Amino acid sequence: MRLRSAEDALGAARLAAAEVADVCRRAVTERGKAVIALSGGETPWLMLRELREYELPWNRIYVGQVDERIAPAGDARRNRAKLDEILVRHGPLPAPRLLAMPVEGGDLAAAAVTYQRLLEHYAGSPAQLDLVQLGLGTDGHTASLIPGDPVLGVRDRDVALAGEYQGLRRMTLTYPALSRARARLWLVTGAAKHDALRDLLAGVGDTPALSVARGDTIVIADAGALVRP
Image (tube, rainbow, N blue to C red; front, side):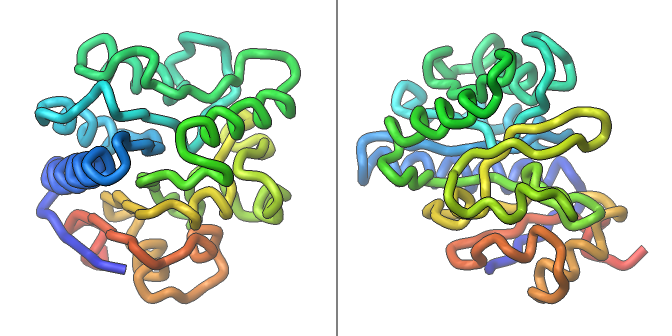
């Protein structure tokens, strides 16, 4: 697990964008395409605005989701809304290359299976993503792997449904999918994340983030998260 630091959230976003761009270039060179999965959040949106300025083989890059809130299409709380706005409508990613989690239908269990099969179509079976970009909650959660949620015990599927968190249920990649990825990028900013980041870097504690594989991992954090408040 490597650590890179930045002065502020924008600096962290720029470092992360450079890392994602490098992974995508290498994957396209080595395997003809790149398949990545992204998380939501304010700093990741900054990262994506930086990323879209890179000259990349966008027609060979597939962008999936680490997790998604179960809400109607177009709901501003959906991660897809920002991914579509930044990368597709105002960016270089062709719309068919955005692999969005299908959370609008009634049969969500079937939808999770459908999404796993979609990832397998592009990233092999079992799916091996080139990179997963992860965030870190103050409670140590990552993706929608929330403390105490039964989804933490799901090991036989790559995509599962989590319980309600902050008013909404979620669809999420599970530990096997996150740990099987060729690389992991944690993007952590803000003083509120200090304790959770300290535990992640030290590899101590029992929070959900600690159960994600630590190999081939880079952590990018700003001074706010690294320096004790």
